[in-house]
Image (tube, rainbow over all chains, first blue to last red; front, side):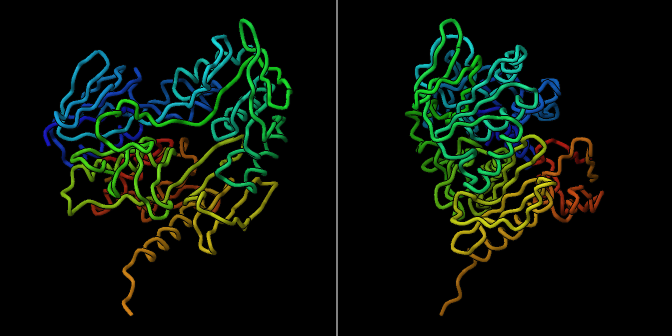
Length: 394
Length: 63
């Protein structure tokens, strides 16, 4: 390979590019990013940056040492796998031998949102800065969506003394963590003064020049001057329509994170989908650690000879910081059918819970117990290795 | 090769300990201990991965 293009200049793309160089790729390396910024870290956008505790510059990843060309503020609009060309907005073409797709995901939008002031999404740096400016006036805040982003922003804004109501169709916050953990999170937020309305849909929004209220299915109207739509994320695969790649909805890859049906194309991060036995089949992970780890793995496999590729079978980890609690998980929580709380220290806000499926450990969830995560990860790796070891013949 | 941790940035995520347990360890008080400050070359890939997966970019690898 003489030319490799990395489409997507955030965490996964950056880690892929770094890995390509570290693994000895000496050809032309180009990163294409729709955002104007070089890669930056997103977790602070809902926390420290939103709270005004850090400057935007501090979120940037160090990348001056990376030997690559940066094409920023340009969107990839099409991929031609026969000619091996990426077409950018404006029509420019970038040819490649190898390709890493790392275009991530974007905030899911509310269809038909009224064109009035007061609505926010939170995905990129500009979103976070706009939200931070908007809360300076101490608006009454309604957050639609009690997922990870919704909960983090609820905590950040509540700690700034704002009036915060969170609504969701789900029965508890952070649905994937299950009702036990979700219930504890709910109580934590409520102790801080956040109000929730669960198992409700939003019928519509009210307001003339700007938003004034959120109308629920029950008829209740939540008074709000600012609405954050935290509805989850959608993989950025629109540009790949018609390229011939399988999209379901992410870029369908093999166990090596290489796109199926084509040579020399890898995918990593939110946009990638691949078979992972522990994940219950085709898996797509929208968490930070996966973006970094899969960027590394996909790049390594892109360069490796077929016999030297390594299957990408991570034990995924996740974290969220809300108030003074760091919630972490390791493993595939969604595969669990049961949860046991094995350590519970409410005064220290510490908790350790083991998630099992048919009696087998599949994940662990911790509150303020970071030291447990590497131990559980090791146990899960050992279990996975044992499970995939060749069975003894009878 | 030298491993340098910025303990002001460290938030005890433990990703490093998961990826390179020979070099990084979180104790029960969630303090990070660097077990080998100058790891052998054979640990390079793991150590560089540990630096790459630290959510707060607290780890630098020199040399």
